[in-house]
Image (cartoon, rainbow, N blue to C red):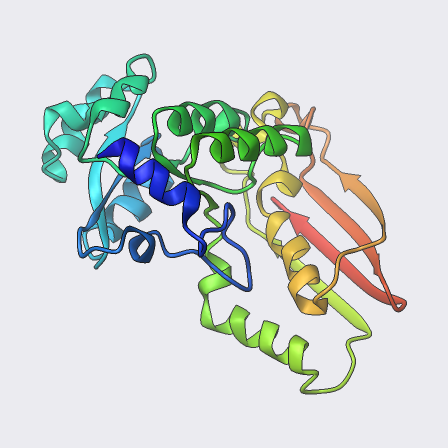
Length: 273
């Protein structure tokens, strides 16, 4: 079944490797069946345990079929809570054996940014489609490698940037495209939240891909792109961080300016303050 699915996905004319703003891919439609797709969450931190896992109990076309964790206590907690068969619970060492599990169609990578490339590639080589949390990876070179492997393996790679499906964001895209209020001349964007009460979080560690820009910065940067419908041609930025140990290697606040074709300017900010 895995081989026939792979061959189908390689030749499907409707297929696209990445989920995009204009033409998001529905894996459910590509399978051409009413089978609910099984998703395995990789990493059972806050976002998986408190957000994604509960949401997957309400989804129509997919469900939580398994998960991966490096914490034995979580195997029992989430296995019992969501009625996950023991054979569908993995750790980071035996993860590659997911290739033999027909219950799992999609791997959702919900790990620190520095681990996105490794587990996206391992999932693709196991013949599974991949959803990877944002930001996609640590740098553009890693992103290109992830895309290349998924393409070679004939699996789909989607980034978990949910706002492209969110009604208000789609309305902004519509206004931009149709020039409802005339030409866009200036865009002002910002996104952030407070992290000072959590000084030991991995998002404050450079080696894990931490910092405000790598986390919340994705949102205002994307907003300048869909708020103009263009790609920037020049950028400048300023980094700010308090003189405390937890911010010795990462930014707490970054401000940035983007220039787009046609002399359109964007001013942005992202922060953990």
